[in-house]
Length: 491
Image: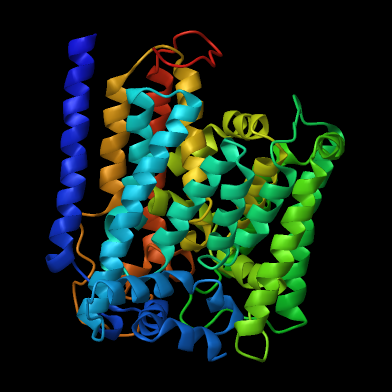
């Protein structure tokens, strides 16, 4: 057994070396997005703020409130570059600065993955799965180098940090992490403040009661009603260039999207359990969370550009829903292509995943329920702040499913699927930029993003997702569990 583990450790170390080597190669030789000399759309804003004096940017009151919630990475890149006397005044250098910053963050993510594994008492097999889930996917292995000036990796990593401090019930570092996250990814604030407030208050729910099923049905009904009202009465529309709704499939798209929302929130809608959980809440945490929320919103409102934010919560829901009914379950297809086999495993193992979430307390239940609901959106990047936590819990669910046994054929098979679906091997820049997002060559980039996934690529990715699902189902069936229901550490 020891010699077998040594062999797997050597191979794991070799894979880590290849991962680092790929990032080193892509520093100078990797593809970059063709728009704005490698800066992209939002990335050009973040790069521009990084090139300017941070104090001047913050006090200028020219940054919209939405982007104040994404400003911190630019501030860090600017000040670290100044400290190191690294000139980022032109595109190539600012891209490289963000690239190095992102790589440093991924190293931090690796460290916190190790700490989270220690909390769950993982051993090599589960660490192997977790590293596959977190680092072998499109956002990390491809998009992080293709469009490095985005803040996606910052959101990815801070969510792992927040999760670790939540698991350890460390209030002060958790609060600091929440403050940091609020200026990296705007929607984080709405999930992490309840995470702090509710903490690890017990959330004991064995089976879903009738009223919980009814509430789980009401949520998508109210959601779709709001989206319909905004579309028909307020004139809210997706921007030009997104995938138009297929009217022939529209009823199926609506029903399946509502079914997805019902499925993901159903384990968390027992009102009686929520009231019981509230009795276990430490109210000083609620006060601290409220103070943090008000203070952060005040800071954002004080330094943001006047005129308010055009993207409100209701308009966000409306636009998200319009994109998600363009094709049946386009959100599921997009997420499966973006995050790879572990998203499909999350769906397949959702009862076990949700059970582990509930074990960790009411704060995590709220966080996962909120972002599971928002995963109804087809733009997978908007889910990136929640995905690392879901991925870790999927790995813990697999560990418990297998008990004390180890199945390296399963681990390597999942790794192989993840590598293929990550598309790190596929060139995106196969032709000059045309601005026609639903046609090739532009579709080589936008086919990975639900609202801009063309009908033809949707059909291709449906086939890919089905093949991946069948393969994973076969692999799960062949797993040889140790002790059924074993929740003890691996040995």
